[in-house]
Length: 113
Image (tube, rainbow, N blue to C red; front, side):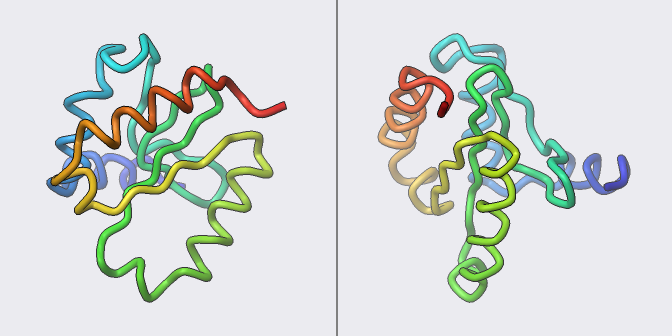
C-alpha cells in the first residue's frame, strides 16, 4: 500500500469522514486514540484504534453494490485481530450522536478475545 494513496485519501475525505474525524481525533471519544486511513494488509481502514483493536468503516452509496467485497474486507480485518464497525455515511451525517454512542459502547466492550 503506497503512502501516496494514504495521503490522497486523507486529503480527499468525504463529508462523513470529516465529521466523524472531528469527533474521533485528540482522544475525544472514550479517551481512545484513533488514526485515520490506516493500511491493514491490502486494505486501508477509514479509522483505527489500535489499543481497542477497533476499525471503523464508513460506507457511501456505492457500497450497496459491493457487499461481497465489503464482507471479504471485514473478514480479513477481523482475521488480523480487529473488530469492525460499519456505518453508512448518511448515519454519520444525520445521527452523529447515535454513531458516537455505538463507538463508545464498542470501546467499553474492549478488544475481542
